[in-house]
Length: 500
Image (cartoon, rainbow, N blue to C red; front, top):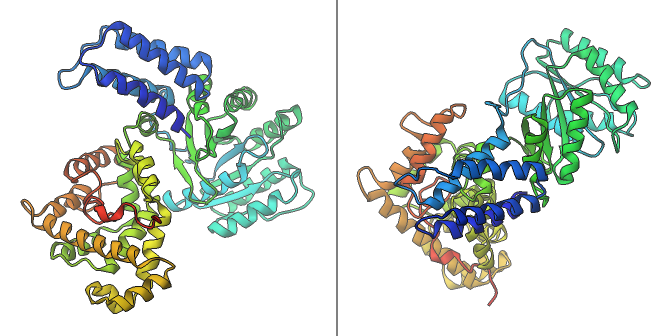
């Protein structure tokens, strides 16, 4: 979503950071470019103008810290201003007011914005991450099968839905949902209201009536991130008539320009609480202004990377792996685990997008044939082997290599590259296990998980400290991270699966 803006801004800052000292003209030229980049990314004119003015005021007469270049100082100011525009005064973006059970949450928005799916995603999140008992109810009596859609989603994610009674009005359904949530001992009840193709009086009156009955603790507006500035106008209309407490932007994984997110917060003053990043029911993330600002400026998102690694790998498993790796025991089963881990963590694109300075390399990696398809091909080759061969790849003879390659629909040369890669990774890990006090691999692991296990996911300071430790101790940027094989990707990896 933010790629175009990210590319334009990193181009502007590349020119700045190469200079020793900055003149006022340099800053003016850079900020003119920043304004154009913001407008191209579909940020509204007034927001872009205010943004550039705020940065110019802070950059002029700014004392340059000795340890950074003037260009880096400007980037820092732009980063802080981006964060401010995205966050406003909201300290805790993803927190919902769900006290005084049963807490009502009203979901509003236009038709086709992804309201029903988002209701399901949020219910799943509240159930799994916040341990809340949730009841969902559909108030959409106009759209065919809208109620059935929510009931099916409820069954998929294991969340209760209000039984459907045909012929009821939205107000009657809302009253029944409130009653059932109270009697059934639910913590939260979510009301999925009807939408229209555009804002009209009937829609607004309907939502107002429901609001007056349930008195929601949160009124979340769901808007499609691809609609650009129209999304901002929709937010203003809904806020004026109904009063919204937060925004959920959907389709933020699409190829829109991302300017709506920047404008939304500045124009409406309402926080963006969550972003939808796909159709899957767990594809809902807290909107973290600090991280988004970092991603836009190509600074990477190490904290998100650490969190992803922790979600997909257990500390005990990491410890066992480490002990084996230190002895140089790294067979095809280990390699398969590592490759599967990479796919789980978002594949090549996902990982490189989060690593600072790796965004530009992602394109080069793709050209070299390093993508998710390549990872799957490597896994297919390993699956073509017998258990004995996976545990001892050195046993493979020429005839078996042919059979294995054929079984995976690949060439023998591809298998040889994979075997070379496995040997190199084993060697790298053996060296890392021996290097330095306690071994570099151990340091990287403890840097990530700490002596007392994983850092507290709810403690931003602990997460930031873990990210810093991890960044400092990992060789070659990628090496040493659980799930990545402990070493920088060996040369045997590039060009894999590419037909000459």
